[in-house]
Image (cartoon, rainbow over all chains, first blue to last red; front, side, top):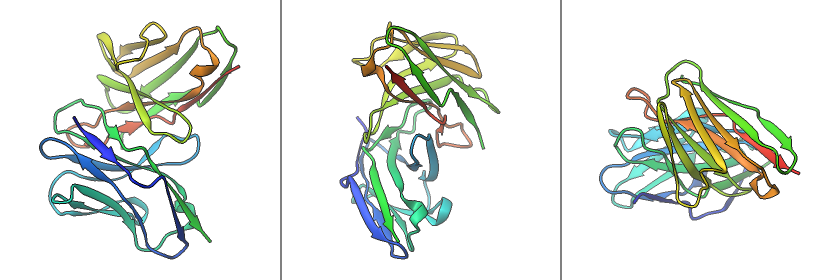
Length: 114
Length: 116
């Protein structure tokens, strides 16, 4: 069975500082990995994905994530945080097979302080 | 990119009434739609999978008679919360799986249901 762990419920960072939101996964075979962001009372917005290829993936709004197979991690990073980045972030995994749902981590609330 | 439109965004209803939530794929055909429920400050929990032309598949612990799912066409899936109770108050989100070209899933805007 697939699973995703986001060990931090909350991450606080000062504006302008780098941010990291952690994610580890468990899946049989090669994973499809995703990061989504959710603002209050809104659906999920796609940030980036890892399917294959370069381990460093660049996505929307300056976010990037690094796929580390040996550590089964896919941490989300941004070099310089903005107050507007404050939101709820979800890591998700899917296996390769067709129409399967995403399995989500519990989410990490990011708070960027001015 | 692909768009999933979910309506209504917010609904307040009285206990005992039924509420229908619609999800439409606007520029693609979604043969499958996933329905999630999100409790405050928690993750998304898969409730059921709807498939066009066949019965929905429900996750363990989800009452199929309580949460009626219909996938009427290749662009419309609906979730009806029947005889709603306050404990059904939650945030409901639909999602269409990725296609061959776009592997990420596409999410509706979500529906905040409040049962009073």
